[in-house]
View (spheres, one colour):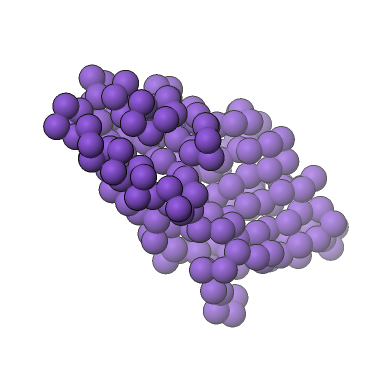
Length: 183
């Protein structure tokens, strides 16, 4: 079992010559729900186009938006932009009704990089990772834990998961990293 992990401090969790596992710095996270008719106004308010294809991501000015469903997005931004995003969306609410919920404290992000990153991900993720294009993300599970898996590069992944499940997932990734180092 992993010792207590401070999930509020970005740092390396496990590292070998083949793969690195890092807890990423906190970001502002929002769950956004809106109908088709409101998407243009919300894109303008956020300063980045809302992607329309499930799994597609858009990025602009340090804001990332992931389409999770036909009317659902995750919005990530630097923490200092949280109020700006909330205010911009609130300003258009009367003409473009939507639901914007800040979930920053609910989730953490873990980055997995290196030549064996895909191998490490397969210890808990049932998806065929070769079918996940670079620059996209998908909902998935990791050893039974709901997560969002981002593919940021050919050997670079990000796992967004609920904070309460992080110790379990981190323990698996640490064990897998050690096993891959022993090969």
